[in-house]
Length: 235
Length: 210
Image 1 (cartoon, each protein chain N blue to C red):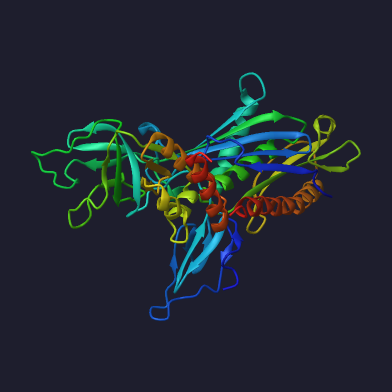
Image 2: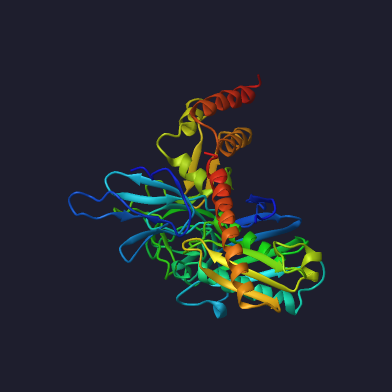
């Protein structure tokens, strides 16, 4: 696959894509479109491939486009009857039913105020309809999702690419920092991160750490972590 | 024939979803893209994205000429953008003149095209515009300066797409013959290829950061 990892521009045509041996099909992800038996690129970026037959274009986009199943951090902006409007940085707000929280019933409503931060999953995200968010999984458990308590912690935004990097299994910052500095973190695919350390000072340090690693490699991150911890300890 | 030196920067502004500053010769334009974003209910289209273009002159309010340019940029972007992927949203394109030393319209189109690439808006192809004039001795000049634009017999702006280098849009004024149009078109088509490689180099630079 000589073209994987190369940069493509809108309008380029891809050929020789590796199809699955069982079904003879190729799965096209974001930035690729099939038209009349040829595959067109419609976003500028790097072609990525995953075995056996997945292809997509990795582009640096600032605007978030909601995708089904992604975890997002939203801000509650409005309440309309039984549903909340949640800003998830997409083109329109997502809806969040008050019943889609762990243990919520018609009688027992979750305590949510306008301006609260919620961490949830996108149950449906279609370009033609409004996205819907839930704070429970299929078994009805919260599984880490729900309202993020407003006492302490700090929410900030960063680029979508940075988020994907933070969540990738090779990324070691959260682990390295967490070894000596316990903290809570919620990372939304929509470019929002919420962190809470033991004190305000520690929270600021973690935020600075997370913000500065966008273009660092594994070794640089280790060095940066050590420096950060040293400064925190007062060396 | 070659174009003047070009300089561009992607992500020049921090707030918009995509932005660029492009300098061609002494002409400089800043373009910014917001979107796909929120839209008023009355303006939304059920099957595709609504594209809005605003052109801001260096001083004063935009007049009729600016509105014509605005409309042209909008029509070009509408052909290149795959609007059906983001129905019921708005894509706003803002171009700000920084310095006009001739060939302003083509610089505006190119700057918006680069900004669209920076915003990673889905497109069928990229576009590049080239302006040329025939001076009083019938010499062809690519991307003329203000004085050459004023003294010319005829001026053309051609916009090409990146897949098969076909014309997407064209404007012209002055008097010219059929042969002159053909030479101008051929010269501009050749020059547009350097623009497309320029775009790719810009993107390569942007994406090589990680």
